[in-house]
Image (cartoon, rainbow, N blue to C red; front, side, top):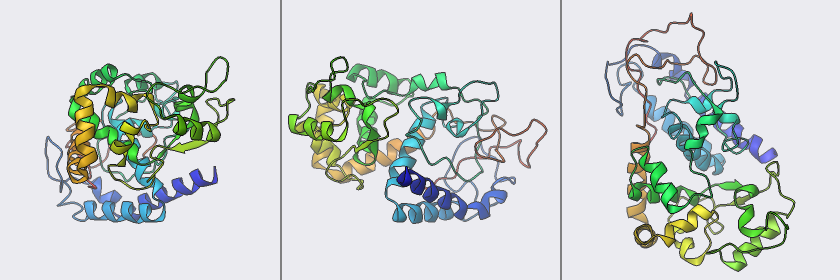
Length: 316
């Protein structure tokens, strides 16, 4: 719990560092119907630089923030598009929000972000069914990514994000424990020695409220490298869905390629992240620019420039 609080503070500090340009991001910039790097060149020329510096400083203090931001980006874009709906703590229509739904709570963190993009006004827990579960098969993964206009190659590329970060025990519990008898088991494709390590970490009485976590990459958990792809042939992918990448011939060929060429994977990963960031983006007169990142604006609020595309600050 102390570690999670420290990590959240780190992201908060990153957001605070770019607050100086938050107001100018709400002012009219160049009108555009599409997202672009340098969108705020007129109203806030240093926007991208400030964001980059803030994120770099936060990650330098706590490497775990990097994984948190990647996961935040993925979970936002896959549910209702990249509209920051995952940030909302209150559902204007009532009911549970995305950030309170099981796929996101309590594992998703880092909700403090600078203002200046077109944000959505709807956040429903039920919409998180669009997020691929850790139990997804190769077929399900392919279909869920295709629904977001991401192809099989991009799905395998983005799965490499599992090279950093941690996951709660209940995400892989049934791979190492029998859910009925609570006796040890080893899931198909899982290295027995690795399964034993996970059982030693996660007790047989684990529930969805157990806050114990395991690194998704046990070798280099805080390094953005291609080790994830090297682990899969050894049966050391943490999730059932990870193992699915090697049981499918086409996916396995990509796994082998990325395991042998880290530079190739990193370039493809960057390209796929940018593409994912364009999923159902709200531009023009759609959405709003929130005054408070986790609350929809009051209906009486009208910001300068609300009739144009506010764009997205690119921190990459």
